[in-house]
Length: 124
Image (cartoon, rainbow, N blue to C red; front, top):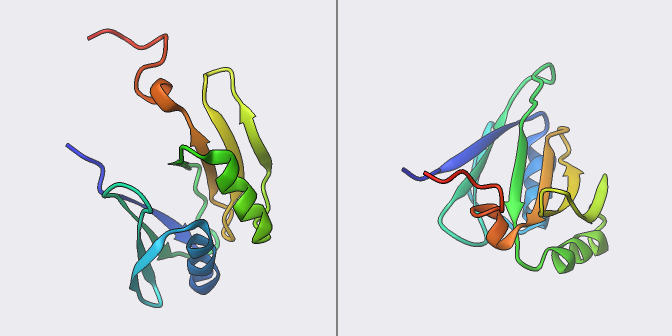
């Protein structure tokens, strides 16, 4: 099994599409109510669906990049605002936190070997 995509609700499709293009996603489907992007690396896609503003989402979406600090610096230069700049976390991931124009929480991170093989991994 493989994860194909994650779809986030957004309130303003034009603002959301522009935001995710600045993050580096390639737009492959663009309609007034739905947009889909190819991720910059790998085979995954990521999509947006127009939703009423009353839609609340507690999900956190993680995007991994080996050169996290450089990526964040590039985004800061493009006026992307962060709630947390890259920080080394206790669970051995380096993470930055930001919110898209609809308030969806995103974490840009690098975990390296610890993503799949942390010291506390359960042995099967």
